[in-house]
Length: 442
Image (tube, rainbow, N blue to C red):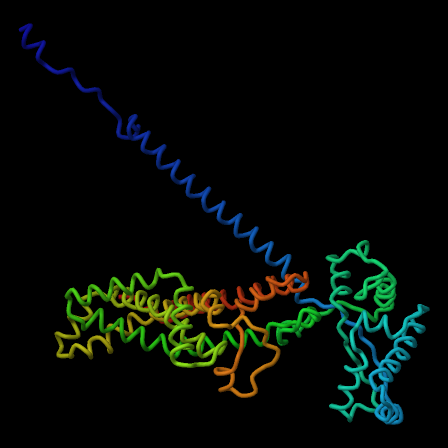
């Protein structure tokens, strides 16, 4: 009895189903810690995103505002004939402007002295601007005409709080201490105001001596032309290649090699595609350097792997029963793919295409190698010239402005980033809408 009793195991302790044992409690604590880590990661990512957006908006929004002098005066026919009959036409028109400005200041109760040199430092070549307006619009002669003349970049920065008058010396040929006092008088009289700068959105690039008049409009057009080329080439080629590889190609070593190379091309640095475009499209084929057509071809090569991979994933996500049902009722292989599989995969295909276009829109390195970072001071004259003529793109223009020493160009670069982000967000929102619109559930 003693040996039998000694060999018997101790009775197991009874546990409750509602009370967790030590091991279960440890697993629950580990799960809770992992949840906290995930929440902390999301919060950290959100904080960094808010900081990034705050930095972009705080530095870029001033680029959309500009200090302008608003003045209205009437140029008579006699004054126009007098100005056009003299050798110093610009000087005469500047005198007319000074007379009108003096009258408006006197009406506001402000008495201050200024001359042609001060007006030129504050507003640039006013006489030339006024003369060009009346020569292009002779119907305005004898009629009250309002002019909105942009102030110089230093005056503009002074009212934005990014330019300090303490560093101005009397020998400075661009601005003098008395010029800012005069600008304060103009602002007190309501003649100098801050307004939305449409020229930044619609204008073209300028030289280093006229940073305030620089605009990103030509670069936006260049990016748009490149995206047309990318869409026209990459969508049909990428979708056709994906359909063949996923639905029709035999499974052998050759197709496996193609699939591996496509995946590798998606991870190749974008600057490699720029070198390829420089060697093939410019040096070998002789296409124009800095042309949106060449930029679109380079970006097409870079975008194709992304579109092919996303399209194949969309085709693979369609259940095999769809193909089997179509084949079972007598459809051919091509009819099953194009009439049943492809419509169900279309939301994923469109999403992948738009994401690929958005990625191409923000690329800079390939464009630098094909010369799309040059100075572009005019719009193309025709639609076809927009593809073949020299132009820039938004990322390249932002890089160009950021590399210049003038603080106004740095401000323009931040503003260009805002416009680029608006385009990228719009394309991603469009991808979400199209996916929701065409998505089918089975």
